Length: 94
Image (cartoon, rainbow, N blue to C red; front, side, top):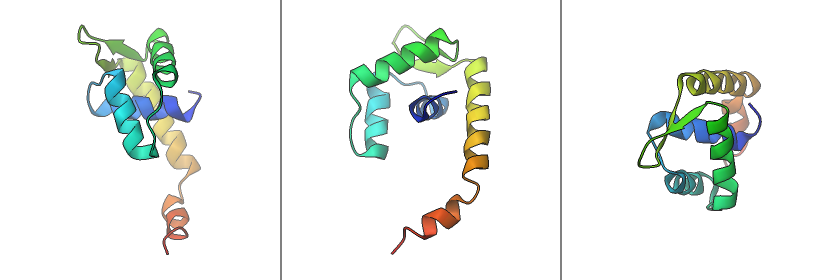
């Protein structure tokens, strides 16, 4: 899986079905600015085309089985890469 945005979107959707607009609001809470539709929707289309997401009649996205597997791989990679995240975080607290 390429791109941290792809990973974040899969993670957010794993918690609950969401529309593109709801995803943008959640990303704004985490990053401090709301990504544009031109940023969000191409990623959603790519993830859907890869079979990682499905969309219902209300335009809410959810993970497919393949999406769940991809998220699990992404989470494992994240934790392997940042296994010392607590130590990293401690240097930022002042």
